[in-house]
Length: 324
Image (cartoon, rainbow, N blue to C red; front, side, top):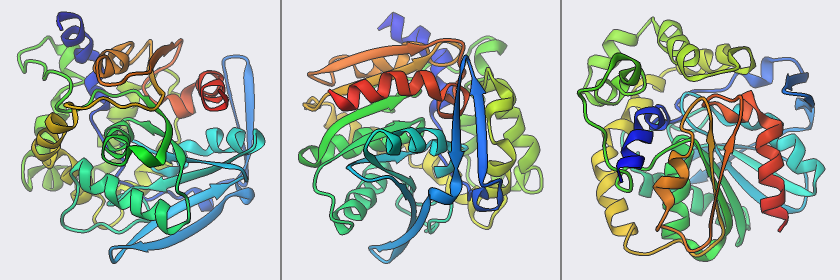
């Protein structure tokens, strides 16, 4: 437990969610990124945008490829667009990639309530059911790890495999103290700030760029690889601030739910992914004892935004896990 608490000082950068609308459709249709020694070229013209009504709420998702379905759940402060490299490679390897904007984020509706992970996971479960998918794998990053865990725990019969990256899960990991060194507080301050009613919206309105760039600057290792302006544009959309903070304000409810979920272990294969310049082994430590078939890996020379900073390394672990 001491080892986990120490890891949490770094890991808490991940207790966040996606709450922005992607402007990806207006970006270049042929985009490439080079990280480490590999290059993944993305043709966004191949991506198909869809909308579906779930319990009266509009959910936006993007697909590419054909074959076994893989649901991709993004984290904060990103949208479905963070999965563009992973989606491309999944499609190339015979999968249907389904990247979603969870409730309150991206082009999806932003209701007043329903931001606990149980509610967010249920929306995704119902979405996939409406689309005709009765068995699929899941990959969740950051808050997507929170929601992915809830989805796998609450609806285990539909989840084939699940990979969870760069987060610790409220209710499973012990909360760190608020009295920490400045270098540790850089990863902690936003939790209490974002949960305060009304004040965060007032202080960040009109300063979304400064707020988000501070996070991208301090949480990434390969800063130039992150599509920051896409997410900044999204975050300034109506309701973006409110819906984003709503996930933080629902943390107490999520903790109550996870306390009950922790009474049973995940039985499907679970891959826990950390990065050496971010959460390190905290994802694996968080899930130890919570899954019967758990493997942990750590990506190197990579910051928190693994889907964009080191997609090749991520896929080198993810594809063998899915193919097995």
